[in-house]
Amino acid sequence: MARKLKWASLLLVAVMLILSGCGAKEETAANEAKTGLSADEISNEAFKDLFPLQYDSYLKNEEMEDTKYSGSEKRSKFDHDKEPYLPILFNGYGFATEYNEDRGHIYALEDVREIARITDKSVGSCLTCKSTAVPHMIEEMGDDYWGGNFNEEIWPKAESMGHSPIGCSDCHDPETMDLRVTRPSFIKGMEAQGIDMSNPTKNDMRNYVCGQCHVEYYFAADNSEVTYPWDNGFKPEDMYEYYETVAKENGFNQDWIHNVSGTPILKAQHPDFETHMTGPHGEAGVTCSDCHMPYERADGKKKISSHHWQSPLKTMEQSCATCHSNRDLDELEERVMDIQETHMEALHKAEDVSITSHYYVNKMITSGVSENKIKAAQEHVRKGQWFWDIVAAESAAGFHNPQGAMDTLKMSSEESFAAIKLATEELVKKGVNIEELDKEIEKVKKAVYEEVDNFKKKDLATNDYFPAQQPK
Ligand code: HEC
Ligand code: HEC
Ligand code: HEC
Ligand code: HEC
Image (cartoon, rainbow, N blue to C red; front, top):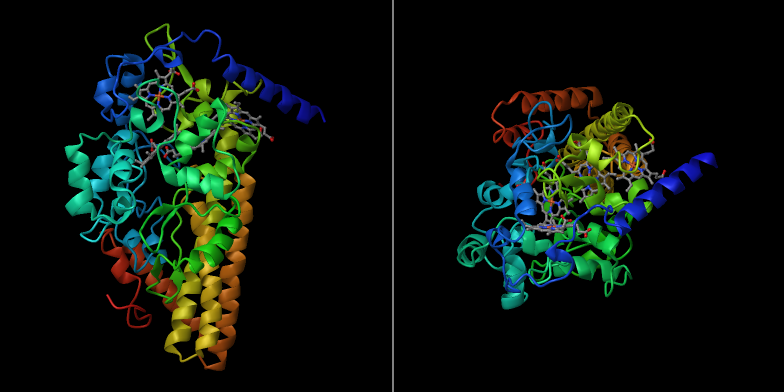
């Protein structure tokens, strides 16, 4: 009871802070006058002279510094201290070739241009969360934008429009600086869940501007449109249900066929918004901007919202102490570390079981087990990987929803174990030596782990014992 009261008063303080705009915050053009900018302005530089403090803050997104589990250095996720086995889990898909940690917004265009996952077949949808030209291209081209050829058509067009990487116009109306949502997929996704988008509060908008990009999505089967699987809710099991029903009815079955187990797999993408909204802070009305855009004193006196989007662990004084004023910040940071360590341990366990399940199914295929038993095992493998990946792809190492992530990882392990159990029963009937199979799995994992060239890791995930299950 006392605990509840404590949180209730914390929340009240938070709400007051938000409503009063922190009291001392100076009035800016954002609150009243027109800026004189064109409604179509998409260049960050156009905002520079009008809002020098926010612009300077934005430029700090160039800084690169890692925290224990996150941060902003350009790093491969396949490095030994990160996730060296991902080339097995994503085998047969672009994410097994190159997959990097995220970094500052300012690098979004450079990074999408350089990543090996962009090929001559890539579509316009890949630019959707990177460039300020996207809303105008959608307006101009309609649904042709999504499926337009990335290299041939979409990128050159965005360049000729003078686009910026994730910029002011993505979140602000250039004429009034009011917050706005510029990605139509977000509005469609929210409305599909029955959420009224006609009149969001200012506090809602402090989540929504981020939720337009930091979400799970897929490309629709008919026109490659970026689509959010939210009809049934934000939880991983709600989204899975969507993929098994609505998405399948509309012709979308999988992102790719797994090269080890032949399973149709769904690739999860950074569901920071969904995870946060269903987590303790989201449910208490705390927003992304509270932690990731805290008020700071810019030129020694004026208070602005930080436009340096980074790990809040680097700014706990501004990001957390506003609400957790009764806590020692070192102790609070330790609490975050505890959450993250427990989380990463559970994540790696679930990942390991998922890997094993893929190889067991590979052995079912090469041992001549019946088609329907293989299909049944693949169902479990698909679910096991989904419930692992939707947690792994999230950006906060468990912090945005600690308990939710643990529950989801439990579901993942249960599904992967179910696949292994089913496979074992069938393999034993076929006289397969399970001990030898387990040894071969250890060998193949070791080979992937020890390969120093991250681009070659994927090629070592299959071998003579575990032949590839799809044409190269
Ligand atoms: C209560 C504070 C809080 C809220 C609210 C919050 N986050 Fe976070 N976020 C964190 C913490 C803490 C981390 C972990 C940072 C680390 O490990 O260094 C994090 C990590 C991240 C990262 C990865 C950062 C990096 O350095 O790579 C992203 C991206 C992110 N959050 C986006 C969001 C979005 C989008 C929302 C809203 C939908 C949100 N966060 C809401 C505290 C918060
Ligand atoms: C990812 C979304 C996003 C981007 C990109 C963005 N802003 Fe903001 N901006 C916000 C949010 C959220 C607030 C806080 C609004 C509130 O709560 O009233 C804000 C507030 C502001 C304010 C009001 C004063 C303040 O500091 O709170 C100004 C002015 C502003 N931004 C300018 C800019 C400029 C200039 C750029 C481009 C260099 C930019 N913003 C890019 C989300 C964004
Ligand atoms: C238009 C799409 C878009 C919007 C809007 C957006 N983001 Fe991002 N965000 C990205 C992309 C893309 C990246 C990764 C960029 C890269 O790695 O090149 C990213 C990276 C980040 C990071 C990681 C930075 C680091 O140091 O590793 C944080 C934190 C973050 N965003 C928070 C937010 C918050 C908070 C909001 C809302 C206020 C927001 N983003 C709005 C697309 C967006
Ligand atoms: C706008 C207010 C607000 C901000 C900002 C905020 N929190 Fe919280 N925090 C809350 C509320 C409210 C709860 C209680 C939620 C519940 O228990 O239902 C909470 C709960 C927590 C908890 C879980 C309870 C506990 O003590 O173990 C942790 C950990 C936590 N916050 C850490 C952080 C960190 C770290 C930051 C900064 C990155 C942060 N919070 C920023 C309001 C905030």
